[in-house]
Length: 179
Image (cartoon, rainbow, N blue to C red):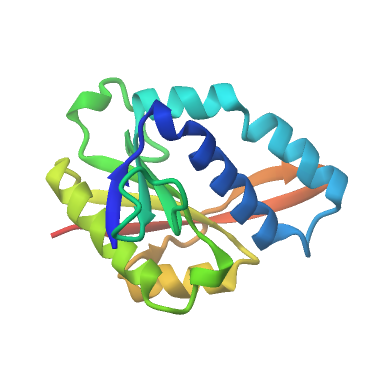
């Protein structure tokens, strides 16, 4: 398996994978119209183009898929300040956010996600990260177990509330210190 740093050439592949995996994961919890509305506002082509230009985006692929045409999964890495603190100069911070760590349903439970997580951690260390943050929906127990297995710790009394359509969505904040 290989890891491909996504470029603008892969924007459609990256966006399609993100939409597909989001819908696969949450179709049981939200109405079709709420999912469509969320995708229309949070998964626009313009947003994905901007993210590819300003963040680290990786696609996880079969060894022969060097152009990342059919990736197994994706993740985004973004340098951030410390959540909840004043962050005037992000260049001085060694905190990063891991998000859109998405894996196709047919690839889950086969060790592929673990290999991808190990790659992401190596990449984060190369980028100078000392701390990694991520959020997980409170109802996504599978993801919470996965991240905990890799040393992420849920921070007490932390939750981010977002709405997906008319449904509130609570997300827990997880942190990992890289050594």
